[in-house]
Length: 325
Ligand SMILES: Nc1ncnc2c1ncn2[C@@H]1O[C@H](COP(=O)(O)OP(=O)(O)O)[C@@H](O)[C@H]1O
Ligand SMILES: [Mg+2]
Image (cartoon, rainbow, N blue to C red; front, side, top):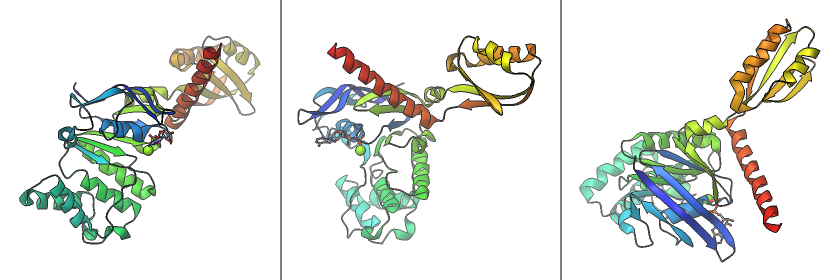
């Protein structure tokens, strides 16, 4: 599979002190919807500007469609649609006049421009507002104008920087739907950043997680979902549980056992989940206990994400210590 975006050793240091992007190796496959996830200040926007060749890397390089990207790569940039965070527009323009202007910038002849603008305005659901001044628009409506604008040149690659930022739940949902539709169009690759996992997990095929300028995870959505560790089981049993608990504690891969008034919560190493579960049931049967209810605990994707950040933080801390030593 071809990759549309490749970054290698990509690094950006601002003012010789802020390391915004640190040795980033990204690979964005063709036709993927790649979610670029990270908390505020993680380096997402900087990475995107580097990818687009809008700022110069301090080290490393970016390849788009196999071509080395630089400040003068306008030919490559024409094949990319870019949606900046919270885009600004000339106030007096309307969706029609703005899209017409952008179409002219891209050198589209009138007979291509007019039908394309009509189609785009329809696809972002702005038909009733197509002749209203943008200055009166809500954030969600502005995002939709910007989305239409970045599609005007029918780009093969879409780069969207936090398109859901500042939107209310309805705005988020319609933006997510729009991105999904775009991503499913033939031949398009979408690179979309967000600091909210829930916004992108629904439609992404691939995910990269950046924290403090470093890529701490990179993989397919299936791999991400494996991170959602099913890591506990809660049992309600009837009978004498004392010896059951002590035997369960002795089973390998059990991380902890807590006994409550109404049940027992057992922590399990997620890598050995199913085999360990069988061991627990074996003990249950041996002890002649009656199982009343059972629930398998699992982390949400959000928790898995926070765990990753936490893990990275503690590693960073350890690294700092070992460097001093
Ligand atoms: N032009 C700049 N000059 C100096 N520091 C910057 C500049 N742009 C971004 N930074 C810093 O780089 C880091 C990453 O910022 P950014 O890429 O905007 O993060 P994100 O988009 O993930 O919120 C932050 O610490 C930010 O303050
Ligand atoms: Mg940003």
